[in-house]
Length: 177
Image (cartoon, rainbow, N blue to C red; front, side, top):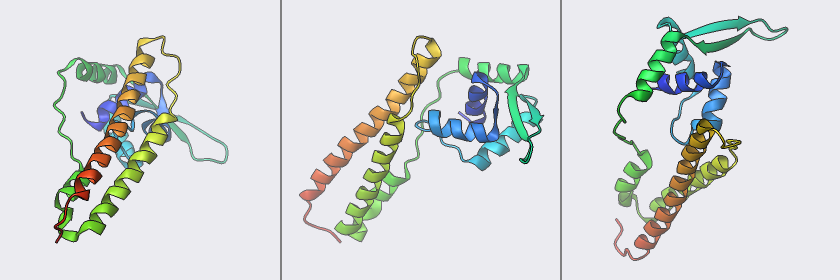
């Protein structure tokens, strides 16, 4: 998956500005796709150059013009082609696990600090995800959005269980560098 696919998907729900897209990432898809505002704007520019989106400039009194982006037929075709394609193999990059793999060399205190920091991140993310309201699940889109949200919550809860197991495993360790 590329960022453009997530943006096209969000724009298929409704036209949005770059700012709105950033908020949508934070409030609806952050549990499976992260993008910062600068990445979003760069991708919007590429989608516009490729003819996948149209941009309407709306003048605002006392504020910068608002640029609202909508899918074109080419954008719909690109999104549909990606959606109907094969499921991509997940190849996660988990920086915290890389740190954990090597942190023993720094000793017990740094290892515990790393686990504490990660646990705080996971708990914060779970709190944020639990606040997302997908609304009425009577239509397929809402039901699937609720399902992806539940996946994010389940993963966070599983990470907390794993953290507990890791801490228990480390209690029995006697040798540290």
